[in-house]
Image (cartoon, rainbow, N blue to C red; front, side, top):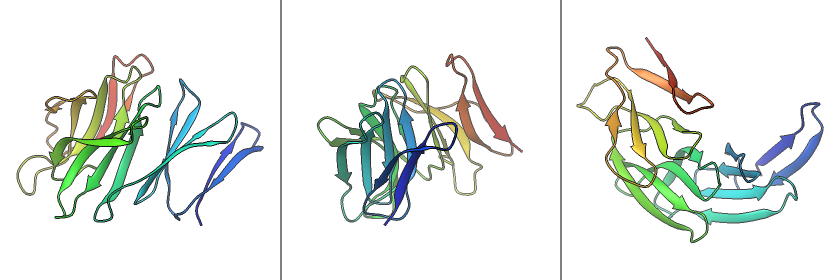
Length: 173
């Protein structure tokens, strides 16, 4: 059984969330004190103050979850998914209704980064032709077209927003 552990700066364990799967990817919705964790098939959320689980959602059995990001207010979880046919999609889960929607279909989705204001999602994908290098793309979190941030000759990765949301840092080769 996997475990998500929350500690303070001194290493004191505040909460341990034990759930169904071994591997969890963790995000934090700081505005509302919510820890979001995703495994291959589950997305769960816990209140950081009380330690109570707020929700547990299971993806369709033929799919699997990859990279994740959570909106600052904790109302939406964005995740890369592999669908029944092996296709890749960037999806959004509305936490309250537990309804999911496809934002965009992609060839791959390596990592996600939510803007501090929750309006933009940066993701790494090789949306171009076969053999193309991964690039950073931006998509509005309420839906719309994804656009490439810029074309880096040797690819790009690991996007990270500045605290103000005005800049996006990333790696390239």
